Amino acid sequence: MSTGYSIKKTFFILISFITFSYSFSQDKFSNGYIITLKGDTIRGLVNNYNWEKDPRKILFKSNANEAPVIYTPINVKGFSVSNEIYESAFVETELSPSAMDKMKNEEALKIQSDTVFIQNLYKGNKSLYFYGNKAGKDQFYIKEDSNYILLIQKNYFQSDEGSGFIAENKKYLKQLQIYLNDCSTIENKLNGTDYNKRDLEKLYNYYYKNTNNKIERRNVVNPVKLEWGIVSGISVSSLAFKGKNAIPYLSEATFNQSTNFAGGISLNILFPRTHYKAGVYNELLYTSFKVSGDYNTITSPDFYTISTSTFKYSYIKLNTCLRYNFNVLHTLFNVSAGISNGIAVDVFNNRHLYIKQFSQIGEGDQTALTEAKNYELGYLVGAGIKLNKLSFNIRYEYGNGMSPIANLPSITNRLYFLLGYTIF
Image 1 (cartoon, rainbow, N blue to C red):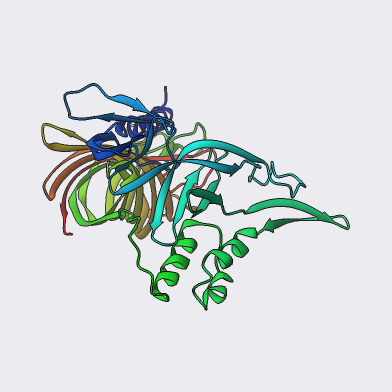
Image 2: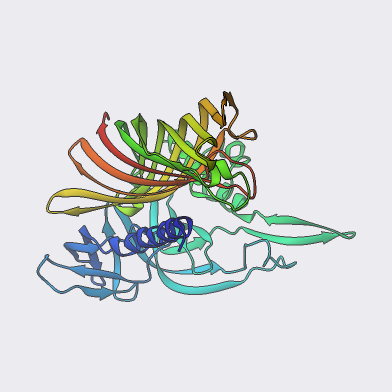
């Protein structure tokens, strides 16, 4: 089995593991409460999934030692967890496909009614609610008396004289104009309001800022966490060329390993919906290597050639990894997998020839690889440990080196040992 196959297999296994671990990491109970059908508030622990779509059910327990109980929108009036409030509501939802390849030439709405949990985004004299339905569509609602009214929007395919285009039903704009009509300038603001959380939240902020009404509460979104740091350590690098009958002095040479300094800056982006366990780790890293390999052709003791190829490359690499963090005995461990994009900033590419033909001896230098490239792509897998602001990571990189020649592929293998420090 080739090294390339092994590292790619490991890469995809690790990516799958991170995704799998993220899915199960969501099984976390946080402080919250439920509101019973009688209107009583019972505080305890709610299974906090940080939902992208609103939940069909929740798990609740009064304390950590109790077995969790399943609740649905039929059993409770609502619940709260992580400063998010959900209400049980009987609503209409629009289920027409929104993907372009499945979109139909059909303006009519595909409405279905259901009792669900919807998230309260704004509460006041004018409220706004969000629901992610089973068709994967974001739905928004206003409330009039005790009724939840769907803000209607739909994209659909429309054809005209042989050409097709995407049309949009924007009835929600008229609905909001009527609903928020005690703000005299709301119509101007509506013109640039698309059907998404960001735009509708901006609209409601504008409404409350420009009226005498006060917000009772609004949904506070936990921010993405950014961790800036520095890394420094060593890399142990090797180079090999493959391919039979290509360029023997490269493909049949054995190159020594090279141990060099590696260091740079890092940015770790952690996502709140994973409870800050998963994120994207980015690194701008300087790394280098210098290796030499001999290839000898000996006909007799007085007739031989010694070819020594030397490659000295310095790279600036942008490393981007999917990283998953987990705690063991109050210590933070991580596993990661990703891609490396490197640009060579300093290159030495040389072949030294020593030729002996009986009494005649000659030697000289030439370019070892005449068609060398400066860009290198690599696959990364790694693991590490973090204690407070200090971290230590071991990472393996499998790269495609500097050869662009199809029948002479180059392979770089690097093992990094890196210390890190989180600045802020």
